[in-house]
Image (cartoon, rainbow, N blue to C red; front, side):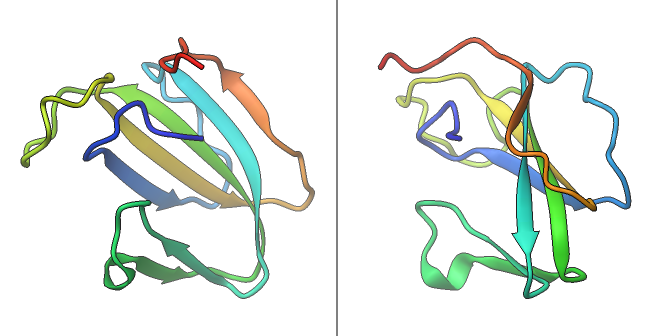
Length: 115
């Protein structure tokens, strides 16, 4: 998975007790298994320095991760207006599951990459 822009992107990560409903205005939605045997999740972006990652703890086990691309305007902080691509808010939702289900595209958005 990749973002639609090579720039600052808004995102959120939420831990839930069970699978949520789909976000109605999300243009692209994909799910995958996320094994967390240590109970520790690290979140960082490709341009983050080692000190910029975020850590949080969950119960060890298997989780389902859903990423929804929700249309958005430019972020409220500085961003590079010379970069191409649409602005989206990336909503990541995690919840515990009992069995693996693989990767599943729940809603296919338009492709923004040429290649």
